[in-house]
Image 1 (cartoon, rainbow, N blue to C red):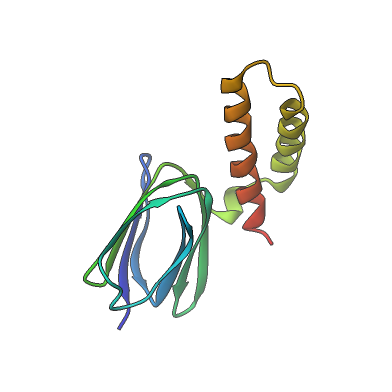
Image 2 (cartoon, rainbow, N blue to C red):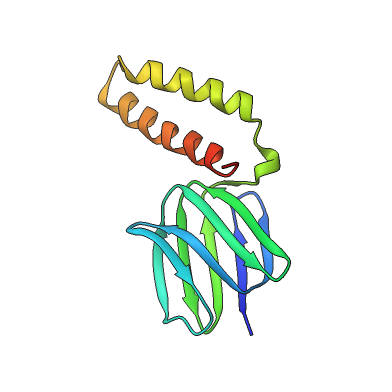
Length: 130
């Protein structure tokens, strides 16, 4: 007996199926969700979502969103997500270097906040390959 899991982004459904358990990037750290988990609603932070299935682990880099757990049914509404095969490592590494360089001298507080968030997202995309 496992969990029914739905992962949906504004662009499209990303996953709909059975998982043994999952690990999601919650606002206070990683959340392990197993069958018979207590009902839960949590904010998702940028991180790697790991869906543990009978035939292996599927990973998605998620940018944020919300998760609801109820009666062995888990729904994740993510703001953005990418699969490892959709990440061009060289491009992301170049963008991360540029982002870190620009963080040294941002022209406004808003730009600084944007760059911090972008750096985190790029690091998450690279982390999927680790």
